[in-house]
Length: 317
Length: 237
Image (spheres, each protein chain N blue to C red):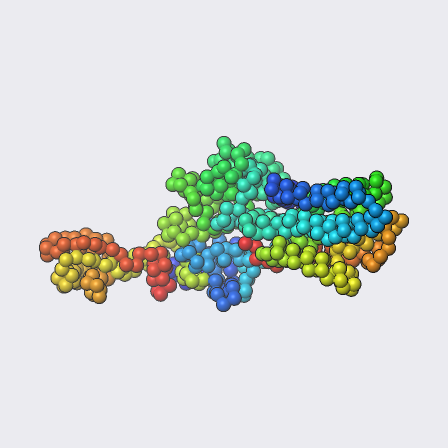
């Protein structure tokens, strides 16, 4: 694997999925650029902001889209135009790919039949029980909530007991209870030796679910490794905090003496912008300092707390 | 194959779509009743030219088939459900063929009933004429379906492209340029009708029966091949 954060090492396992120098472009737009990594059994999270290229990468990993250059193999075989291989894969895309006119059970059964499941009724029962939707299985899917549709889609993805699961933004529309259930289910599936790849643009989501993280930014693999290493890198990241108060010059002179502050400058509109690598301490020290200096704070706001800026920081490292 | 066939049948048999198909299929029957009512010596030729060639083979049949065939894949692409099929461990031809068969089943039912009814009315129950017209209409359905299923796969504007094809190619060029008739589904259907009942239908400028059969097989196999190839190479949304 490339770009391991902090050079973290892993136990070497035989890769189930191998992405080798893969790029994909649409006209002049490069969606994925020269990405290489291996995926081994366990839960791997594909993390990145919206538009980073996660879905394009997942689509190439499942054979739904062609690569412009490079190769994707699963169990040593090319995934593109390889129908026999699809018996071993379960894919759940980010879109609600259901037939609204079908009942939940009908949908899972049809998917099982398409996947060539032999003991169909038992397989359908088992898959629906896994997602805890037995009571709703005989209702048309267009009467389901979004979360229920997601779960029934997951049942359809699991009905043939695949060795590899590829899930694109699987927690969209899920409530907290469903998230907990989903997490337990994935852990159980991973413990059985399956390879699970899931994508998300939410750091905490991937942190809770994945053992290994692949960080995708602007179509490139920015980092990979255990989540702790990536989280540690994030914690070292400097934050810009904008402070509006009644005495900006006085505050700037005082705040620069704090240990949690790396630099201070004034905005053209009179606000104080503080650069800090220890925002937790700054949150405590700043109000104290203002109180002791008789400065009235009107507003304190982070300037770069968006996911894109967080990912951008990691890319620069 | 059965699962894809049943799924496609359910997808394509919405109430609105079926209602429009029924209205289109009834139109030539109504025209036939009027023509039978005011029959003259030239009526058979007029019936063949206006109702069979112009309406049934040239517009009603292709329109009905287009409305169904274009949706066979286009709806799945639009709803992003096509991946449910393409990520299944079945060869691509086992996706294309049942979708094509479902299209033929639905469109063929309407067209067969319509063709049977109009020919029965026009030829007063002459079963040879009735069967030749019904069979030739079904040949047209099969060929149009194979072409329009492919168009639904390759174009996001399948209905527009299909309409242009019906109006310009089948309606305009094949009517005025004799060479184009060798590449016209409408004329293959007409030729089959002539070939099956030479006694009833006058021989005029049409494609030969054998040529029509050969070309029909080539066109069907060609579009089937193109659809399967497209499904194998396309990026599935």
